[in-house]
Structure formats: C-alpha cells, structure tokens
Image (cartoon, rainbow, N blue to C red):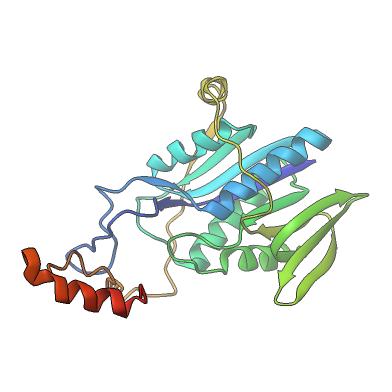
Length: 251
C-alpha cells in the first residue's frame, strides 16, 4: 500500500492576523506555522494504513522552502519521505496549485494506491484542490470522510450527514478527503524527530504558472472582542454591575 498525503503550510490558529500594506496578503513575519487540523488526521490515517498493510507514506506540499519544517514534523510520526515543490512564498490560485500537485504525482516513481487530503485548509478553506486533482487524475474521490477502511482493493468510507451516515465504496487507486474525528493524531516523539532528520525531503522548483484568478484585496473580519469595560470606581460602580448581571441572566 503506497499512500500519498498532501499538506499545506498555514499560519497557526489563534495568532493576530495583520495584512500587508497593499491589503493583498497576510503579513507572516511574526506568525508561527503548522498544518491544518484535518491534514493532521490525514497523516495519521496514512501512518496507520502503512503500519497495518505495509508500504510507504509520502508527503507532498507546494510552498516556500520554510515548509520543510512542517514536512519534517510529519516525517517524525512515521511518514517515509516528503516532496516539497518550492515556490517564492506567494499564494498560488487553486488551478495552479492543483496542476502543480498533479504534475508532481504523475512524475513520481511511486504509483500511489491512495491519495489523502484534509477536507479543507485552515487558512483559505477553498475546498477545491482535491476535487481538481481527482478530476485531472481521473480517480474516484470521496470527501468529508469520518471513517475509512481498505479491503480487497476497495476503500470503504463513511460520511456524517445531518440525520445519519452515508456509506461509499471506491476502487483503488482513489482519493479521499478526511475530517477531524477520523482518528487521534499522534505527536512526534524525540526518537521520531531524530529519525526525521535523516529522511528524504525531495526539493523541486515550482514551474511558474499564469494565475487564472486575481486577488484584488483582503479584509479582516470585524473583531467581536470589546476589551475590558470600566463600570466605575468603588460603590458608584455597583448599579452598573447590577445591570450587567441582569443582562446576562445572573438573577
């Protein structure tokens, strides 16, 4: 069983987002980075399949050279090797990203039985790269998977819907996209991190592509945090405090 998991380097959740002066990108120099939570589940699923069935687990990402850090962290939990399609750090549009991934998959010596994506990235949440890749590779795809098993060359998947579950089966080679709850991702151990330093990260230069979409501007969502409100000083603040307690239903 040869498995491929596609990842994306994204800013860590919880950080304060600041836009660049032209409002077309996120200022990242003060942000930490990781991978999307759904992609952590995707890697864990790949590791478990290889542990159960043997074979290899390859990681693939498109991004700046710094994305090697995210690949190494996932190599530390059991992936076999990684491929980084190196860009200049600019965000690519979905068509260009999917095309670059497809080219890398077709060029790889390993003919992957299963390709796993996270359901959506934690930054743009475009929810389309995996669909474009499946269409280009002419492979069946099952999305939003919450449980999965492989038997006799068939991947059986379940999706959660509003009033129950949907069951799908697809012949390998296939593509699945997974959501959190599929499994509990493991953390890299110290021995795993040491072994990851020796594993192969194949660096490839991304071929420039003409974007088909133009990013005009970004806007930050209005903050709901009003900060601390001073009701008053000493006993004069008591009536205002009583009103607040009434509003929140304390009595």
